[in-house]
Length: 348
Image (cartoon, rainbow, N blue to C red; front, side, top):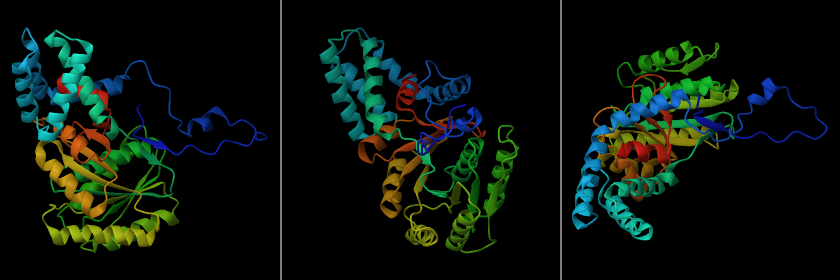
């Protein structure tokens, strides 16, 4: 099982202390050495990602079926990248980088250019690859935002399952108090997480108020998280469009109130964006980052008609780290973002 987050490494033991038992040592969650090949769980998830991005991969792959590397190939590739929602700036960057790689490697086979493009995309996306760190603060307060329909609450449920599966105690703040059935939806995901056979009875608590003020719910949840010694407090905020200024102001209020409950929080501000929204996803990242100061992204719904290239646009124009990407509705269909894996899936 691949860990979804990295705990802060504990202080090294004093030389006079006896060595910890193996079972206890395992809980320190030190990063494991890189594996030679993906575990079966990861491989299955990667297959889903490749299937979700198959349409984009096929469109780009056809560019490299010719017999020579010329202006026509680059023009067709430019069109394919733009159609994949890569955006003008990222497309220009990738084409310039690709031409440099072709020249330096003296490549003459169009099929080999595809591999060079994968390397260029990997290098562009690499700065976005960053682990979510749990343990520097207790509780680690994570505020989650996103527009309606992006999969925000669903992503919170999936993240809860993996946090709890890795031994973290989680408390949820149902601060989306005005959307019908929002609290119930969050409760369902919490129940699913608790029912996971890997959790071994680890419970997930929820702080909620019917029709209450979202900021008040958030304050109560963070206070309760501190009092109960929770590892993580996840705050589910109401979905809104960045053009709804009064609602964006409410998000800012929630952040201020969280800071009153915990002066160091929120420690993470995540935005969930729908991978199907194309360049509008970049607009959302810019708007929410300006309002809240984003620390990370969750990209969802890369299992359907998503073109995927918008991640390149984000990397070029607003490089906010991508912690997770999702490819389906199951609890296990959310995984850590890996630049190389995504580049390969994008090109199939």
